[in-house]
Every structure is written in C-alpha cells, then in structure tokens.
Length: 564
Length: 45
Image (cartoon, rainbow over all chains, first blue to last red):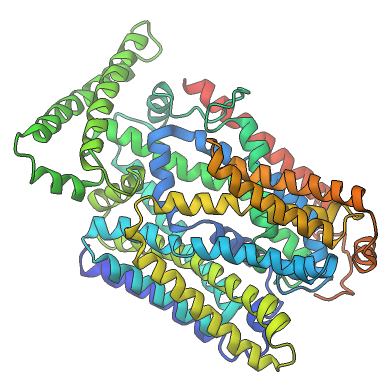
C-alpha cells in the first residue's frame, strides 16, 4: 500500500463515521437512540440487514472459499429466503404491533419476566463472547498481509466503531451501513472487473467457465440425501432455514435493524429485499473466487497465499526442503498455462477429454505440494482468507487497493456496530430499565445505553486483543454460538405458534434443554451445527410435555397469545 | 409504529400488489436460481 491507498482508506473510513455522527447528532430520547427516528425506508433497512450479516470475513474469505471449493457453498444460503418469508409473515407484525425495543421484550409480554431475562441473557452470552471475533478475524489477516501491528489494527478499527455507535445510536449504525455497503460493493465490483481484464486475450469468459466447470468448480447444487457432504441442497434448505430463522428472527442485532422501519410495509420490503438478494450476492462473491481460480491456472499462484508466514518459514529452512517444494510447485504451474491452452484448443473435439485430464493431473500434483507447504507453516487463519487479499495486492492498481482494504474494514465496522448497538439495547432495556432502575427519564436511559455501548465495545476490544492467546478461538466462538442459539429460537417458536404453553413451562424447558445441550456437547462427537437443532427441538417438545403433565393456565400469557 | 398500526396488505408495488404475491415471487426467484445453477453446471461440466 502506498500513500494514495492510505489516503483512500482513511478518508473513506473516517469520512463515513464522521458523516454518521453529524447526521444523527442531538438524539436525546431512548426510542430515537435505540430504534432510530422510525422513518427508515425499505431500501435502507434492506441494506442495513445485509450489512449486519456480511462481516469482513464474508468478503475476505468467501472468494477464497469459491477458489478452493467452487460454488457449492451457496447452498448454505438456500434457507434464507424461506426464513425471511416466515419472519415477514409472523414475527415482524407482532414485533411492530407490540412496539418493542428488543425481541426479548416480546417474550416478557407473551410469557413472563423470567423468560424475557433468560432470552436476553442467552443473547448477551452468545453475542458477547463472539463480540471480539468480528474485529479480530479480519485484523489478523490484514495485519499479517500488510505487516501492521495486530494490536494497533484492532484498536483503530475498534475505537472508530465505538465512537460513532455511541454518538449516533441506531440511526448512525443504519446510516453508515448504507455507505459502507456502497464502498464494499464498489470495491468488489472493481476487483471483479480488474480480474476479468487480467485474463489473457485467448481466454474468453465462456472459456473461463469451461475451465472452471471442467475442474469441478461450478458444481453448485448437490441433490444427494447423504449426510456426509458439508453442503447439499437439502441441508442448505432445511438446516439453512432453521439457522436463518434463528439469526434473522431472534438475534437482536438483526431485529433492531428491521423494526426501525417507517412502516410495516417498509420493514417487510427490507426483509424481502434480502430474501431476493442474498443468494445472488453470495453467488457473485463465490463466482469471483472461481474466476480467481481460473486466473491462477494461467498466472502462477504463490505456493501458499499466506506469504508472510511462508517467508518466515523459509528463513529457517536449513535443509532446503521448503525451497525444493517451491521449485517443484513453480515448475508445475509453469506447465499449466500451456496445458490449459491446449485443452481449450481441443474444445468440442475428441482430444478435449485427454487434454482436460492432463490439466486435472497437474492441478492434483500442485495441490499436493500446496498441502505440504500449508502443513509447514501451520497458522491460525484459514488459507482461504488470504487468496483474495493476495490478488488485490499483486494485481490491483494503487488507489483501488486502498478502496478494497476500506471495503474490508467497512464490512467489519458495519457488523460490529450493529452488534454493539444490539448488546447495549438489550442490556439497557431488558436488564437496566426492567430490573435495576425502572423509573428514570429517557435522557438517563440514553446515557446508560451509551455507557453500555462503550462497555461492550471495550469487552470486544479486550477479547480481540487477547484473542491470540487461544489457538482455536474462531472455532471456539462458533461452537459457543451454536450451543446457545437453538434454545432462544425455541422460546420464540413456542411464543408464536404454541399458544397453550405458558411462561413456567417454557422457562424450565429452556433451562433443561440448555443444560442438555451443554452436556451433549461434552459427550457427543457430532458437528456443532446440530446443537442448534437439538436445543430448539428438545425445548419445544419439553415445554409441550410439561404443559400436558402439569396443566394450569397462565392467564396473562394466554390473553396476549390469543390477541397475537 | 404503534399498537394501532394497520396490518396493511398492500405492498404498493406493481404486479405484486399483495404480500402473498411478493412471497410467491421470492419462492419463484429461488427456483429460478437453483435451475440456473443446475444449467450452468451441466453446460460447463
């Protein structure tokens, strides 16, 4: 990065944050601070929901995922449109009718105080633990690539987000997300155009797709019913619906974005905007990764994309083993361009299949050497994280490099800001105002909310700063997230769809289910994603069983559920 | 945004003027994407 890149990066990031603070200055009432002015239009809501979900890792890693595994990862999002329809039909009208600040307020009105606090506590625990990750994950990649100090990268991005989230509240988050997403899409589009322009003249876009398809990178939909493949149509559709329902419907960081709409229509259209755009958006990012794969069949890639780690290992390569690996790898890559060209020349002839097989064989040999090199460097971050950023640094012009790095930071800040805003809202509304200090003025609660934003921001920063003490931190956070995600969804599903179950039954079912999930986590050896389903299903069934066994009606919850 | 907010069934959009039609459009778009991906895969494999 040169001075121009830094100028683009800093002016973009600080400019958007300053604009957000300036436009939302003077918000004094709690509703305006936590939910916004209530005049957000559908398009802004749609962008805000999208920006909250799409963290920096989405834009750093997803092209790398496309590079490594092709388009198959898109199946992960197949459930999102259906979940968003369910939320638009059932969840959203109730949230808006009850005029809630947080999703957990609804649990209090439908069930009772203890169930509300349980739902809020599970959210704070799960989201609070993961709070550092959205800053830490991109910071470790960017600091490694640019040789920046990791702690300064974390501090700079963390402090910017804390300042504008504290100053402007929910409206500042929504407003800045709109421009941050603009920067992200402009950067991604520019990178895609540069990538296509860098392909040699003898390789058309159609030829590039032929190479990608022939090397199994366009296998997007797998209809097999086997449970073994990580991504299939069915796991994406069924499991994805379940996960998206939990995330978009009950996670306060998302609920806070869409309840702020000017009307029910605006909120619904914002959700439907995401239902329509989620799959094409992820597909475009994956396709960028697939085109990167094709590009690197022509231009030799580095043996590993985390080049700073590789160079570090080379310095200790006394027996020249790594240098030999690198030599063999470069030799194979040099042959590849000729092999790909021969394949395309033989297209639609009998010689096509053997020519393609030669490319596949060379690819397999290069992959073997790549794996050996990866083993040599170890490292905490996934290799896929470095694919896109390596391309950006080597092949994009200056200025555009700054824009792309700004895009990664924009993605990190937009999701982080929404998280902080949601953590502060839940702490203020569900705990501080509801339990600790019930009769204060709006101005008092706004100050409290700002303090809680700073508190959660500092928690996230501390977590990110000390994260490198834990080796498998990202995986640990994902596991904690999954272990604590199923039960809150069950609370909401029972609230919406099982009117005869009351607060006591669902509360004790939730406690028992959560305990069971934690117990099973230590006893079973299954993918952690399944704990979402187990926690939710057990809690729903147990609450019904408890209701049938012990009977008795909670009149207040019954009255509300029938009115809903 | 209050308890008296009407449950507005009109989307104000051309062609998809009611919410069930919007939901149907989303489902149709999903099917179109899946079919397009299958065609893409088969064309270039």
